[in-house]
Image (tube, rainbow, N blue to C red; front, side, top):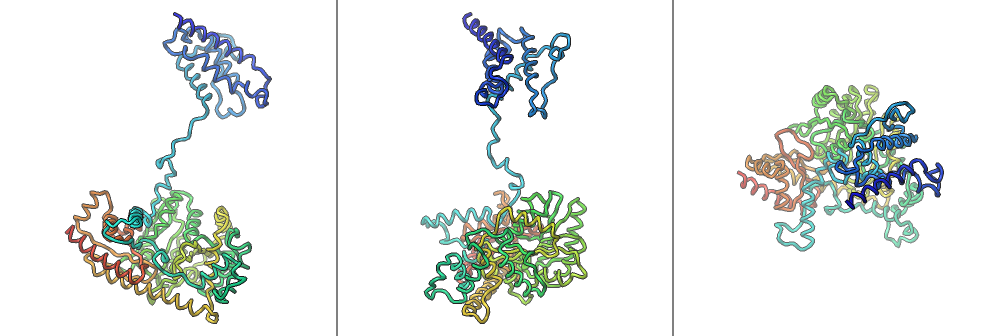
Length: 607
């Protein structure tokens, strides 16, 4: 009885203050003033409501609100009258009851669930807005989740664990070092940098050295460093124009003119943080949604498939012909394009990688002319990935797509070309400098303006990368002191890469069930492997693709890191892996020997 009286009294007192506050708010109407902001109904209305109705408004309470329907109606009326602030116009309150609008007749009755729902809403308002969802991988951008980059995937993660164990003195592994044949990173596997380039970079990074070189730098390196500092106002620590410093873009334009025999405009050149940045910028600009397609070769470099997924586009594959040296067939291009269009995809661009990655082929000019003609017929933009243009080990010379398109300007006047180059490949191997460029050919000015906007979002490309790009396109001249050493280092790297490519291809073709096309260019071999049925069953039991299973087994047994062909795309029913040709000759011999021994044991185990 005492409890009942207590709750009854609390209920009545609470409602008294509730209605008194509704009809007699203190302090006027200026809720934002310091004097009145704590008296605003926004603050105390939910709190008074909670005091007034808890805990006596449950369905089983002796003071159930159904015994006082007029109170329920009065509360609704007052709330309706106070919910007309402009900020709520997008979510208007329920219609006001007729009695509250001045019409005769009794007010409608509120049901228990309606009244309790209103109170719950007030309590929620008192507690503040709900928390954001807990951060998990499942509620991230789905395009990020779809993007895959096999070159640094599961195998590399396991290799990193092994490297850590070896550093910590683990002697239980069946190998003593990791052979990183998964990525084109020349200096990570002992390739020496070009002396002249590093001397200039050292002087531009620390210009005080120019005052007293103590004979440590050749005079042409000193002169080139001073030239570069004039071209990069503010030095290597300051931002540049978002397209890169004009002086270095002028050096790039002159290089392109010497290479192609056609004019090049520095205002059509963007310096970027490696070629990857310019590729992503181009794709981001072109892809409007899932209905936009980008044609990519199969096999392809995963930068393209990952970026297309990231920007929400559709990947349109066209197959390279392995039996014909990974050649590009114009018939395959037309068939892939037609299939995509028939399925409702708007094809925006065609990617061509020349020399090829991962396949190592070099396109003949005849094939390139057919590709340019295809782009004229279809209107797609030609994205020419030419970062390996110096890495050519065959009699087929490198020819740029810009040159071919310019040669065919009269017959193909509407072809748009964006071409890419980088300091990371070739004989430089300056991957960590993140330098490169893209050149726009026949790209409309309003389109270039949008590319500039994308470039400006990241402010500017890094300055060391710009300087290295300038050095790549303007190396020592024959009459300068550094030329002989520069020429010796360049030819030594290129000839050694040719030797190593022959070495790996020869070793692969001697293995049971393995065939590999010659490496004509770039830095990779892409052998085809035929695995025993038992090995395929074992892979399926572990939930792995057969080529991934094979590559993981190779790593576990030898410490050799390669990339499964499924990460690049491959024809149905075929299996491949990609390996670089970068380990120095003595280590390459060790790699091929260990790979051959592993393969022989693998084939016997699953025979």
